Image 1 (cartoon, rainbow, N blue to C red):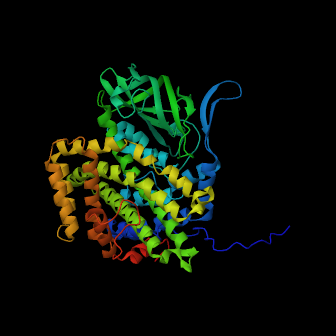
Image 2: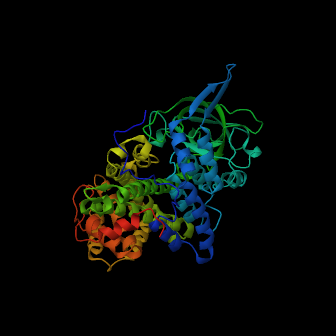
Image 3: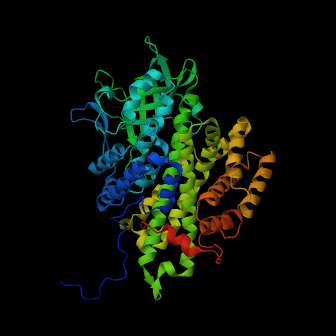
Length: 545
């Protein structure tokens, strides 16, 4: 029977078949700014290819399939043998394979590696965020393994490979591997020194047997894991392979998979070690110091990942409002909706510019840039990941009821949005780490102040915000209770200084007026009406210039 009651009209075409990289002006400008001229054409080419794939209907469908068909745990085979395998939908493997081939686990050994990888991670995460977890951990494991040159020589070429090989086999028999991490235990999540997993040394140098559990172990299908355990000399870092060199399975009992709010395509597990063979990484008793390089790199990925989620949410909202007609015109032209979109676009661009500045500091590698990262990474991780959920929620509202249904993709973004704020240390951990850097590493504060000082005199609101921040830093009374306030202020001042130097005047003006000058309300869409909001919104529209 034909439907005759009405025809469907005023529906927005899907945002598909576009170049996610080229359509993001803040990102393309950051890549140009932080990439050497001789390398720029090559980097743009690879990011353009990745961006067109991320924006294609096929890859978007892979993302929906991977999330609609979560991983399944198989503890035993049909005969009752313990196998502890996790089955993934084919779409997961397609996404992961494409990402590895695109070099998203390879930043440490190629020119401009961190900028090009961070940009690629920001682009590709917009297609599907869950598989970013094993990509991030594999990439971030390199600095920890480099504390042991022999281990690094064996594993680093496999971690940075552009070949994705699924299946559990000895690492030496594969052309590329993935690495995970397990630190959190039942009795102490953030407090890793409360770790109770035991490491008993064997006769062979650097070899141990581990006994204990990990309450959160992401990507348990990985080829190996960096874990912490209590050795005779104290808390120590270990590399634990899933499959031993002789082909037998290392004892690695996956007890269950977590039923998570979001990140549904990725498996997170509770695992038990019982006489599990591992190799020591670094010295006994220096486990935290050994693994901290991995933690810092994954924290940067939390910033990049949140920037990606914000960008995709804003792109969807602006795209929707550019087509949806209400009250005689398109939504994007309505003053109040334009205010909301501009406010969201400011948050997204500030996050992108900050994330890429941090990646460039990794590429630079100088002592001053390392000092800058020491304080800027936890401050950025604290603030950018905190802003992700409210940005995505407001962007979803821009689509109205259409944004509340699964087919829009917005609910998946919203469920994913809180993750990066929790992963690798929640808000309090990051804020306290900012304090720790201030108290113990004076070079970090000097490097930070030098960075924000590069924009002094360009905007009176930024200048005032810098002065207020310095007064806050000079007041030590109740400093721990004020740690979040301080981390927020430092992150905003840093974002403001970057935008004043590098963003178009209308973007910098709106950011400084609202975020540093206090000329806004508590909700999005309360920017001063006198600002050039139309230009801010048009800049955020996902159409290649």
